[in-house]
Amino acid sequence: MKARITLIAAMMTVVLSAAAMPYTEARNKAMFLSDKMAYELNLTESQMEAVYKINLDYMLNLDEESDMFGYIWQNRNRDLGKVLSDAQNNQYLTSEWFYRPFTMNEEGWALAVNNRYNEGQFLMQQPEVFLSYKE
Image (cartoon, helix red, strand yellow):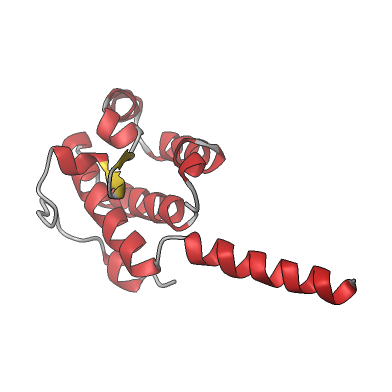
């Protein structure tokens, strides 16, 4: 019985870890989203770095559709509220493509900001943390 419970726990761990977004994909999506936020919200360099870390953490913790707007999403919003000025936060909250960064389509999850900007089109310089912040 004990072996069976251990086997089930091990299988659940494999299944759950397989569902998470790979680090490289999360890193690229977080950078793309943060770049657009920096451009539209007029973020400072230090704000951009903080926003990138917050977005990366959010994306690395997405395992299923309910995570997109659940507890992890609420944490993201709380953390961003601490980084953004009142004016920036108000603009963030009214920008659906930032506030709700993912949408579902026939292919799966997609960044909502891709509806406004071409994928791979960067408008700002990458923050230092993009190159140094490791998994």
